[in-house]
Image 1 (tube, rainbow, N blue to C red):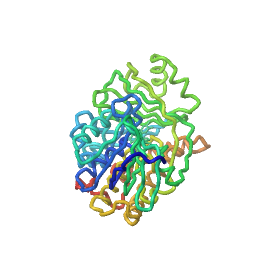
Image 2: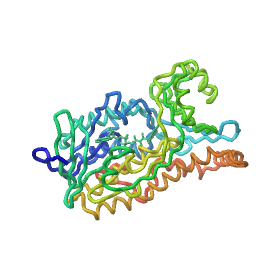
Image 3: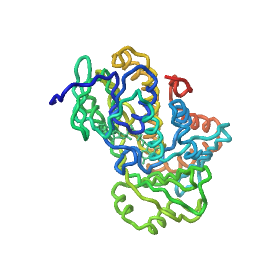
Image 4: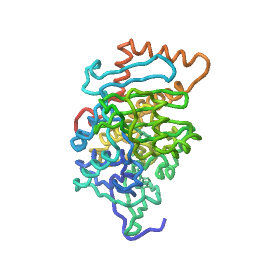
Length: 407
Ligand SMILES: Cc1cc2nc3c(=O)[nH]c(=O)nc-3n(C[C@H](O)[C@H](O)[C@H](O)COP(=O)(O)OP(=O)(O)OC[C@H]3O[C@@H](n4cnc5c(N)ncnc54)[C@H](O)[C@@H]3O)c2cc1C
């Protein structure tokens, strides 16, 4: 690495200011730690990979964390509560319905556009003078030393060097920090693509989320606060280019065919984007003076809308563990983080991947069993209670931010 002038020293450098990195920076804002956040693409720019036109389904636990870090008030009026979830299997009569009211909850979760959530996170970031935000700037090299991690940061004003006692990889599924710290990641390509579009229909969104499993992959239609719907349509990877190339009328007709008429006629199709889907998981969450959070640690299939929710719990747990630390890169603390996150992480990966495999299977007998499973689920209050409890994660011990406390 070519050493530019004088290096700046930090306690924690967060590489990546997407959904998870920006949330972590805010969770640490009131601590005595010297924090840097490095992000190459500002929110509002078309190429921002985290804050695009997708919508995130936020679990109740995520709402609580966003409240604790002062972001919820900025998005509350833009978020739609999910009051009911309808799950169905295409071509079968089995269906299940989960309702917030039945569970004694205000909502099963909330939806918000990533673009709006990103704007709220960054607005709050800019008001926190304790955080040094380097943006647009990219980490272009990482060098691990025994007592610090050196980051080479390249921005419009040239190249600078940071020394940090802890480097946090929040730089997404292709994480440079993960790769340079020697943590291997396994990637399982689902050979599927999620086509995402916001659409309006004859019937405005009323807080109902639909999850329809089809042999080609799941189709989710989520309510948005302005009455429109966010469609996440999973298709075989080879079918995605043709579907993207259709004109709006043809796309609406195909969607109508797949989804049915629950919302009346589908009327207006917004911009479409495709996301190739894979399960990527790092073998470990830590390396010397380095920790992985969010997609850098695990990127999930969006079938259950859990990737950001899980990553936000990573951020909440890490903030709590290092908030008052003399040395946030201390191996004992990093091991504590890894232990604390392992159950939630493993169970959420297994739950999400299990759903994809179960509903994709057309092996003899499996569709019939699924049908019975959905019918049974619909009649079993205990099964519904345990599904709705996923909204809080599979934590052995909930992080303080999730309990509405400071880290
Ligand atoms: C179609 C789809 C729908 C989804 N729906 C949901 C949902 O409903 N609910 C849910 O919880 N999750 C959902 N997810 C998952 C969710 O989007 C991700 O889990 C989340 O974006 C992860 O955030 P992140 O900050 O870890 O990573 P990313 O969003 O990938 O952000 C990484 C950031 O790091 C920056 N970066 C990259 N390289 C560098 C570098 N070298 N230096 C500095 N910065 C760098 C990038 O610019 C980016 O801003 C969905 C995913 C998909 C694909």
